[in-house]
Image (cartoon, rainbow, N blue to C red; front, top):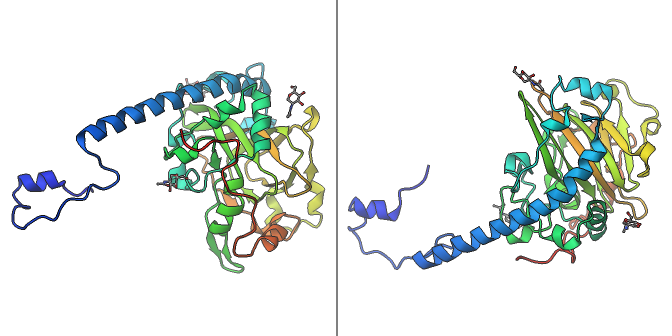
Length: 344
Ligand SMILES: *[C@@H]1O[C@H](CO)[C@@H](O)[C@H](O)[C@H]1NC(C)=O
Ligand SMILES: *[C@@H]1O[C@H](CO)[C@@H](O)[C@H](O)[C@H]1NC(C)=O
Ligand SMILES: *[C@@H]1O[C@H](CO)[C@@H](O)[C@H](O)[C@H]1NC(C)=O
């Protein structure tokens, strides 16, 4: 609940009883004229932000549609199409908007805390490849503000950080997950933003852009929703393990591993619900940029989770964590990249 305002208390005569100290105006309040000015500034910013959003969408959406739909149908694996129960498969069901999506359709930062201090800073190379893919100027990408639950001017040019799976206590191996480590080493260096959304009969899905800067291990994880990536730049090091992995040790984890290039034949990565998967850009000067699809059929819960059972079975996480376990994690740079200017 909200506390009753000073005005309401005064009206009730409750504040008249003692001498009042000089009132401090908290930062989030303002004087009458100041309020009007701030409201105008906020409004001006929203208009500018909607313009940048529309400019990015106008260039990006047709590129995504061309890549993911064939004859108006989402071109993912048959298994994944079937899992969608006939929903969110047609291009007609996917729409964008005239202004940034609300938080539910963008970062879901209310749950993930991934668009604020932990937002993703795309590296210059990632931004440049996206500019090239869309035909947009870098200057437009730097003006993009997702406004997903946080309107801070420090978030221009930043995207949603990859959400961390929930931490939990494993009866045998102890605590699983490490939020601080994830924020520093994964979230701020890999992320996404959505450009199209589908909301059909209880199912929902999004299409957008995902990326990993150089030097990121996005540790092995799983979820019950469907997911696909169409790679634009990389190569990246993609690994998958079979769903039944935890029941029978995979003696040859590397047999599933696929090093890819962004050519047509190897471009599509289908991650059916339940598949354990991982993305790794720690080798050489690697990085990743992809169009992605994320689809949750009606009656399905996401169940996003770490797959720590494979950490010692070919996952990048074992060595990545070891190498970055010092106090500063010695993670890749988290500073705002120079291509994105500060505040507007
Ligand atoms: C959604 O539900 C309506 C009403 O039951 C039905 O007519 C329509 O075909 C459904 N759409 C999809 C894509 O399943
Ligand atoms: C909003 O984002 C800014 C910039 O990253 C951050 O400093 C601030 O803490 C965020 N606010 C909230 C409420 O998360
Ligand atoms: C941008 O795209 C053009 C042609 O589409 C290509 O020749 C060029 O190498 C690309 N530049 C970068 C930095 O990827």
